[in-house]
Length: 155
Ligand code: ZN
Ligand code: MN
Image 1 (cartoon, protein in one colour):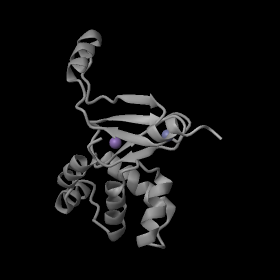
Image 2 (cartoon, helix red, strand yellow):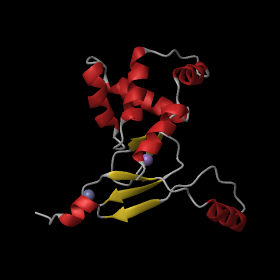
Image 3 (cartoon, protein in one colour):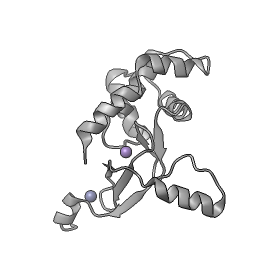
Image 4 (cartoon, helix red, strand yellow):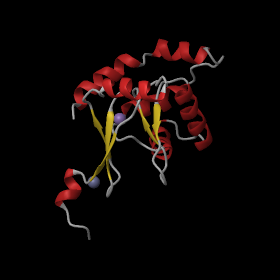
């Protein structure tokens, strides 16, 4: 997993001026709360849930309401600044970049890992032709046991 590379990419994806511009589309301002919320999603490597993000944001902005955090996560999602991985029966997990990478989800501990290898675009073309659709993106998910869980026996 090339975490170093990914971090660099993310810094390029969202700058403060880009964020301001995006918010202007909705006639919204860049508030301190919005900046902190987005920073915490960007910083996290763990694909945090909205609740996890709220806990982190409160370390820097103690009086922020959970509804504000949720509302802004939804807004950032709509603006295409972050995306949400939705797994059945679980809280959505937020990802900071674009949906251009695959994930491995450990079925025991629930960790979500990035897999940086480029997604096979030829698959998209094949499937688009078959059903006559035009895809915006696609997501690949692998499931199993992570390295740590493989080496520890279940208690
Ligand atoms: Zn695990
Ligand atoms: Mn990811």
